[in-house]
Structures are given as C-alpha cells and as structure tokens.
Length: 174
Length: 122
Image (cartoon, rainbow over all chains, first blue to last red; front, side, top):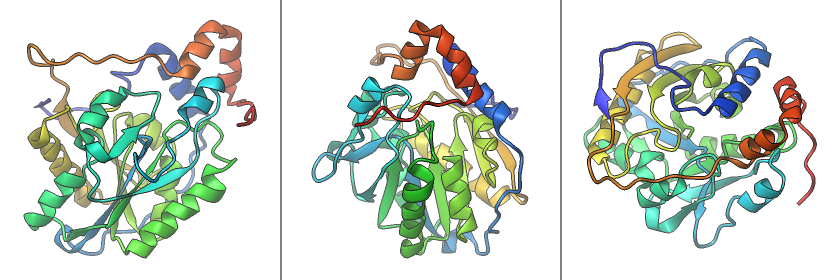
C-alpha cells in the first residue's frame, strides 16, 4: 500500500454491489443517539492495549472453530460467540472461518488483520506501555445481535478486557 | 463491532475502531474511528508486509490520541496499491448470504427492511 495525500476514505471502494446495498440499508435504519465516551487520561506510553478482531479466528488446538457450516446451511445466521486467544498466538496456531473474506492470507500472516506483533514492537519502542495477555475474536457477520451477541458475548468480552486492566481497546474489523 | 465498541467504552475503556468501512462503523454510534481504504480481510495491509502494517498501526494510534470528541473519524492516508508482479493471487467464493439473495431476489426487500428471520436451528 502507499501513503497518499489526505482525503476522505471511500468506505465502499472494495465492497461488492449486493453487500454495499445491504450495508447502506442498514446504515439508513440505524437511529442516531448518544455516543459513550471515556477520555484517554494518560499518554499512550503508559497505556496497556487490548485487542478485538472480527475475523472469525480460533486456535487450531483446544478451541471449537466458528461455525461456518451452519452459516452455509442458514445464510441469515452468523456465529455470535467469541474466542479468547493468547497474545503469543501465531498464524500457525490458528484457523480462520470467516466466510466473507479471503481466509488463506489471514492464515499465512495473522498480522494483516490482528496486529499483535506490531503492538509488541511499539511496546519495545516505548510508544505504548504494554499489551494484554490475550485478545478476543468474534465473527463480524451477525444479523440478529439481540439473540446472543448483546446479552451474552458482549458482556463476556467487556468482562475479559476489564479483568486485563487495559486502558485502551483497539478494534479491528475485517 | 459497533455494539462491542460502545459497550467497552461505556465500561470505562477508551476505544478506537480501525475500519475498512467507516460509514457502516459510524452508523453504530461509536466514539472513535480511524478510516482506512483497504480490502476486507486486509485491514492492516498486505500479507507479508510487516513494515507496511506497522505504519498503519502507528497512524491508527496517532488517530486515537488526536480524536477529541465522540463520533470523530480520522481518515488515514493509505491506499491499496496493485500487487507486485508474481504475487500470489487469492480468490474466494461469495459469502453465503450474497449467493442466497442473488438466487432469491424477492428476499432482498426483506433484508433491506431489517426483517431477519429467526435462526433455523443448529
């Protein structure tokens, strides 16, 4: 990629026509309300960073994969669960079951969607204070969040980040 | 992801989403967004380009510090370049819902209304 002159990003440049239509319809339906706000109260160099991905990644050993087969059988359904992975996990340790992205690249290089190694380098440089001991992954395609994502999965992720005592959570959807 | 970000922020943790589709992320009412014009599945950058990914990460954290009001979007300056000669070409099948709606266009209206059917069961 290249650094170009600043300008507004085209949010739909790489989105196919059907998906773009679906997303724009969703955007039009969403009500505008208040936005939660926790100010950053210390320099990044003193912050512990947590991480959440929506890439549908799980450990090859010891974790159940995200349920791609059920989504294939019922295309309106997306796996609403989450996984917690050790920060040290590498591409060789994981599998990706997200059906809306190209998966083999993620399994070759985790860093293209999960910046664990990059954040470690920034700790070494003193840019950030520390990283969490683990990161959280969920599936980005969930059309009925009210069923399980909101009442079950989100509270568990929040509890996990809180127990990690992170100051900042970086979210990286795919 | 927007619902997750809102809940984490409300719990007292500052958050930022690095989004390849910032208008969609913004519609959830999230506090901070760094917008990037990258392909889905390559949010940080190209496979094998650790230095490029790190450059994106630095800019993302700069955006986190720069955002001073809830709902602000910082547009990152990175654009996707054509792959180098000989680069591995990867393709993938459309998502199940895309194929499903392509074969059943009469259900598109239902989707656009947000009328999502209850799960069929495991």
